[in-house]
Amino acid sequence: MEKVIVIIGPTGVGKTKLSVELAKSLKGEIINGDSTQVYKYLNIGTAKIMESEKEGIIHHLFDMVEPSDEYTVFNYQKEGRKKITEIIQKGKIPIIVGGSGLYLKALLYDYSFEKESQTISYEMYQLEDLYKKLLEIDPETTIAKNNRQRIERALVFYEEHGFPISMQETASKILYDATFIGLTTNRELLYQRIEKRAEIMIESGLLGEVKELYKKYPTSKILHSAIGYKELIEYYQQKLSLEEAISKIKHNSTTYAKRQYTWFNNQMEVKWYQVDFSNFNQTIAQIKKDL
Image (cartoon, rainbow, N blue to C red; front, side, top):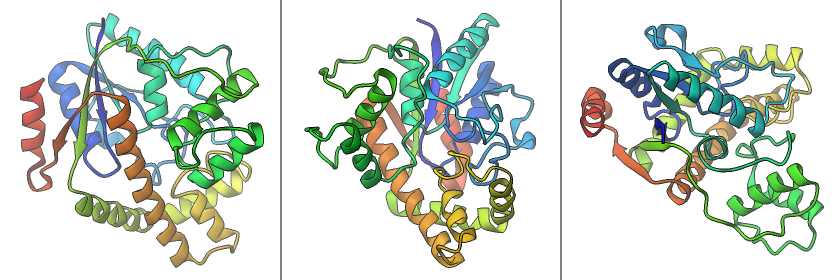
């Protein structure tokens, strides 16, 4: 099987820097594994890598799609696998970096779509809203309302096939020789960093970014679902005060981080590394040594 490296973890733990350093030392190219960073112009709120940070490394599947368009899991699977093949054929190592579990699962595992569906990532939705969607399509569902993973799978299946899921889950077969590297830290510090990151995004111009995008793409699905964007849209709609919107961004971001850990621990064989933020180069050196 072809060798790939996958770097996962919540926002603010250093995935971007690690990916570039590994790409430089291992002759790699980077593939985006974040469902929001495929969209053009969503820069500050998605913590998208800046040109100055790329250090000459080729990056794929970033800034591809207009915010008015809908990018599906099917699209990502097809285009991501194509990029993996192209990178390997050049004698380089694909390094996939991101935190969108459903996208990575579809990319790396033997997960087949019956047709080109309109499937989107549900990761940014609240659990209560997802369960309501499920009840609408399958009122007799036996899936527990707190089982987010099964609810998402049921919704994806319905969008692909047009009828509720009725099959038993089967084990997924991985298609690549994948090394999963997870970056983490203790939860209290992580949540502090996530909340601080939200404040830095506001200071860096997120308000203006969202205002311009909402003006140009008022019906964009990604703007109304992505954390950092949907909350500020509510502020511009005068449904929330700015303070309430920022507070909601922080809460939704930390909740999302918890879901990411649960997803990856249940779905993939991840080797987790405790990040030393005071000496991140030491963390990078340890990972390089292990690889």
